[in-house]
Length: 286
Ligand code: SF4
Image (cartoon, rainbow, N blue to C red; front, side, top):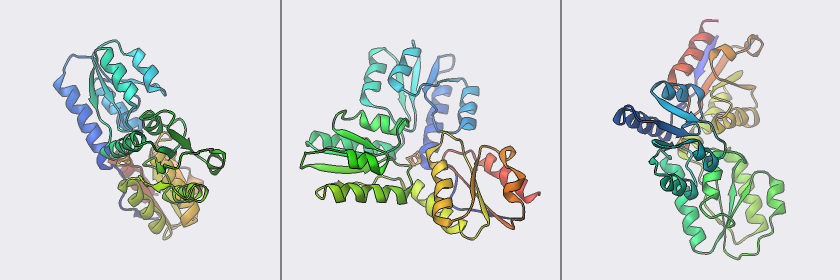
């Protein structure tokens, strides 16, 4: 069976920098209590490894409430970013904070903050329950309007002549373009700031283009990972090929590959390289 290793794939700069920051913190503060407030990056294997190096995971969907579980020591904010209220609460509790927010997410925070200060209402395309929107919306609660589906846009009742639209960094580039179009059709004065990050764009475009050459595509990544799930989605919708998300090679079902000649393999931006290598080796060995 032939394997096409879809390129680019795997770790992005934001994940590499967040893991480096966390490991440096653990090394620099031996014997201290160190916590990550949520999954540092959305891959269970990557976070398991950090826990083995002495960093405790506070598995809280709501970052503000999660802080209540940390009495003292160091808290690491994850690559997805946090709302200003979380930083303020951590400081008020006397915690040492390490901010591992990806620089691309920081750009969106600064954009939203600036627009809000200049009197804009901001429509933010993102997924409910994901920490990145939680953090960005927290920059200007009341002025940032989270929309996930077209129906959310239809329900908006905005009267502010100063409007902007922006988005989560890891969405489908095609779905987001359609959502932005819907917003600008409803509110033609809207200023557009498409903030899907370069790493997400490159991985999605590669998965679609190279996925077309394959009979099936395997995406290595965690169920938690937005960008990994979007890779599955865009291969199915844009390359019109079956695509499956696996955490490790053990999740691969034989029937997915039965009768297939060429298998594409890609991985999310937070997937450790060795997991993808094991998937490639497993399929090549069939
Ligand atoms: Fe940053 Fe994009 Fe990687 Fe998320 S996927 S950590 S936004 S580079």
